[in-house]
Length: 260
Image 1 (cartoon, one colour):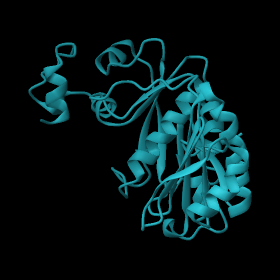
Image 2 (cartoon, rainbow, N blue to C red):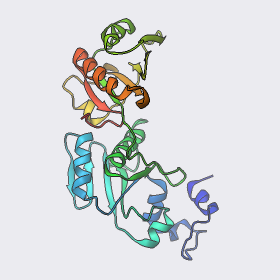
Image 3 (tube, helix red, strand yellow):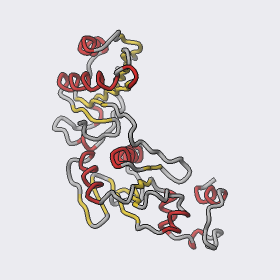
Image 4 (cartoon, rainbow, N blue to C red):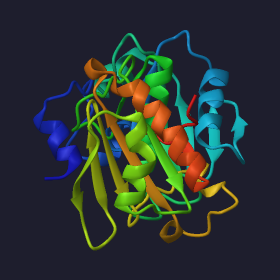
């Protein structure tokens, strides 16, 4: 079933538009149904959004009016209209909406582009007290106030034993619980998990801006998952910085934004 068919089944109010013919539906409404969208409170400005984007994409950000272009992505401001917000199922308390697009094309250029772009929306929503969703079929994501973990991207992959030796002095009961011939491994400690992925690191703009970046095949991704109830976030911050210093890497948050 197509997305527009799904929307019809949900019986969204159409203000009398003849929904049997997609051409009669306003194009902006179709975009708000199909595209990933970020909605923000009225107090958030275009400059706030631009500042947030620059934490995610440090180079080449261009802003014209409410339109931002950077890397392969665009963010376009949608003018508020009460009927449009209701038909698109946007929250009334967030009258600023930005559509995620792709520079020079109608869709993502690689299998990662769509997910990476949504990570941007989620990180902006986290910082600016907003909501985001991949499309109208999916529920709203409201990450504001949620703890965020550090991830490390580096041009060097430590072996499981090297990783354990480096981090164990700063953790409690650290042990290697999984390893694969492909180089992936997992270290568990009290309140913290670290997963090393040398195969499919995420090519965030902050990673590609590093002098050592050539292709994703040259990058190891170290993911941390912490338990706030066990002091995990503080330990994750400490060991992520140590790991980045040892491997010559960079610490980002789990959405690809610069780490504090």
